[in-house]
Length: 344
Image (tube, rainbow, N blue to C red; front, side, top):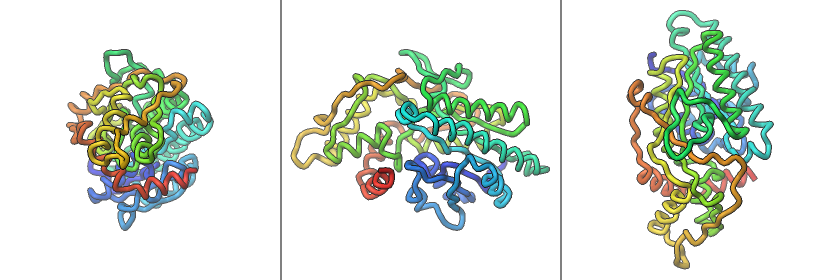
């Protein structure tokens, strides 16, 4: 597939989506961002991208008429669907919005894309793609060994992961039933700049700097595989441009860490580059809280298929990536204050 010239990126004002948009604008592609600007999506995230090659449209992915209008108006070459409700804790307390956005929203996107694709002909139709960005959490949980892969059974354990799994199934069904050229990517835990401070790494960074307790679920021994957001987004674009419709591609970071190890690393880096004014270590702020319901024990991703088929290569290891991330939050405290105030 030739490099897409005009992309519709849903959720492009969010953490991962804005990184992808930034990469594509820098690569010379034109990007139309559709984002409803909920608490985790912010215009500020696109401040370096908006311009002649990037336009932000504020709207809901469940609005199929709006999506179809954008597809037609901008002669879209590919849809890259990042838009999703993604916080597990929120899905436990308020699952309805996850059902609406992650299932009904995906359905509306697929139907609009199918209508647009069906109207195309020739190479424009042959090269059109719909890429569904998903998560490793659809596969459930792992024991102490093994890794998720593209053929692993789908066994979601939270309302969030169940809603994402449903969206993935819809994308597959629209390929099998209608021929819509869909591709699915599943990725492990992301970290990096512009991640809303509700997720583990930015939460610990911002709370540590604010002198607040660092809450850790249970004993902090649950294991996650971590990938820098820039590496994930490069993988997404490789899947879009070099992947095969109907296929699934997994991306991992080869960086399995217990949650408590991640917090220790953050505290130790901060101790070195931003020592506490009164002395002591940021580790002193760590506190353990009641574990959350259905807390998956371990995630890890086998991305050998992506490496073999897509020539996928990571640029960051965890050590270099986490220090770069901490430096970004230190240098962008005004961003943190702005987005958290708007979400309050």
